[in-house]
Amino acid sequence: MSAVISTQKVSKVYNPDKIPVHALSEVSVEIARGEFTAIVGPSGSGKTTLLNIIGGLDRPTSGNVEVGGFDIDALSDSALIDFRKNHIGFVFQSYNLIPVLTAWENVEFVLLLQKKPKAEREERVRELLRAVGLEDQMHKKPSELSGGQQQRVAVARALAPKPDYILADEPTANLDSASAENLLDIMAKLNREEQVTFVFSTHDQRVINRARRVITLVDGKISRDELREP
Amino acid sequence: MILKLAWRNIWRNRRRTWITVASILFAVLLSSLMEALQKGAWNHMIGNMVNYYTGYAQVHGRGYWDEQVIDNSFSLEGFRADMGDQEIPQLSGYLPRLESFALASTGNKTSGVLIAGVVPDAEDKMSDVSSRIVRGTFFEEDSEAVLIGEGLAEHLNLEVQDTLILISQGYQGVNAAGKYPVSGIVRFGSPELSKQMVYMPLAAAQWFFGAADRVTSVALDITAQKRIPGVVAALESRLDTINYEVMSWEEMLPELLEAKAMDSAGNYVVYFILYMVITFGILGTILMMLKEREYEFGILVAIGMHKLQLTLVTWVEIILMGLTGSLMGILAAFPVVWYFRVFPLRFTGDMAEMLEKFGFEPIFPAELNVGIFVWQAAIVLSITALLAVFPWLKIRKLKVVAAMKRH
Image 1 (cartoon, rainbow over the protein chains, first blue to last red):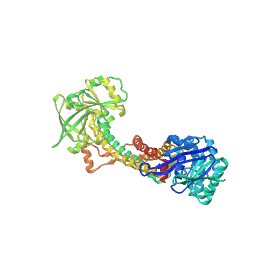
Image 2 (spheres, each protein chain N blue to C red; image 1 turned 90 degrees about the vertical axis):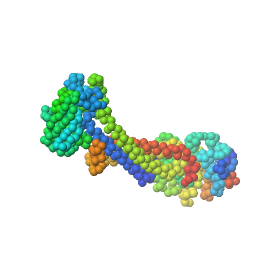
Image 3 (tube, each protein chain N blue to C red; image 1 turned 135 degrees about the vertical axis):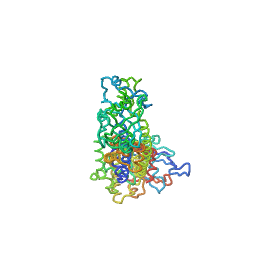
Image 4 (cartoon, rainbow over the protein chains, first blue to last red; image 1 turned 45 degrees about the vertical axis):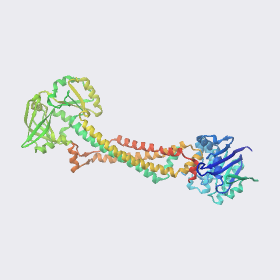
């Protein structure tokens, strides 16, 4: 399979002029289309930093990051925003839906940013809300949904622009077991049936158990890269 | 999408939104009321001085205004001939007057007075003198009686039918002296006029001053204040400006305009303080809103919203609050200003005495003019719009990862 994400000797140093903190040290990794990958490691190991860099939210101090063959570090801030909008889906730990919009509007939001026509938007939003099992909750605002439901809306929102991959930072951290399992079932199904690429940063054993590849980071370096049978 | 997002965002924190809207409302209300009271007071005063006596414009003999002596008078017949028969648009008539100073006395009291020889009907039509007669009646054109100001009547202890003795120097130095019965007593808005005004039929004044057919001024009856420049220009082209001067009230009473400008300047300081209070109030709201939503802004930029779009959302939010506050301010100001128009502020005691000393009537009716509300609302809204640029400065520098870490 072709690599959708490729990092070459990526390093990230915070406070380089004061007390340097080496969050990542020469991390090279390739993630292929359709992977269901978990990045694991203790706190401070660099999981979130790596996720931020491959998500175009942060820039490496050195090294290269290519997404679909593009050197995303070469993009301007504005072009990077467009790149994220069109190529990357994000699922955050705290759901992070727009509180004033309904579930439907939250999923539709990125499509509006992409200036997709109304008919296409409606079809896509309906399809995604059905896929995450929230078709009947579409007019509710986030405050009217449970944590699990909110996170499913966040997954639908991340999938809306048909991204190359989805980055999920601790997506199950705030969910109870049933909600977490339900969310993982949905993600696994999307990965299996629609070849959606998922990259997780997680501590959660339930996520790790589902992953087909587990990359372990320790002190900003890859200590283990393990492939598993589905 | 931006409008929808902005509208819903402003109702996320209803209490804060209403506090902001209320602060804008009170700013518009207070500044409108201040301006309405100030403009109303000045217009009332100018109205007293201009509408009731000076007229919007006057024609004099060349040099009269600089040296207001009866020797600088001019022939009324000659003026009529120079004017010709052709009408001047917006000029509905003119009032010849012969004005000069005299010493008035009765018993052992004296007072300097301004004698105005007028044509009663024409004067009444323009200045509405008869409506301000508190006792007695207006004199006839061919009579030899006088109307005097209420202040003068009080000072000289005069009543209707009493006799007023006048002594002065007439045209080209002739002696002027005469006795005139008081036909009526007039109330003036301006205390200054009230204390020194003596109306007399024009013919009687011409006889008194030995100035047959002569007048010192012709007050112009112009249909509207905004027509003054046009009428003045038309007269200047028709009359020989070597012999005549045509002056608007603004040229004749520059001290009134200066006093108004000085008063306005004082008010601008108060406006400035008021606007500053509002500015910091709104800025406080903006800062709180930015701080509260920093994490959310990080998320929105992360999922693909451009910073300029985000800035636009916050800008629209602030403008919507500004618009709501301004419109409510206009609605609230209207009845308040209307009240002070119908029931004007009236100073009494020392304050009233002080104002009267300066020639001001101690009444402050508010000016009911939609333009004032709209203008004040526009200023407050402009301040709001300008402050709404502040989020742009913050959002421009937003670092997505840092913003999301601070949660």
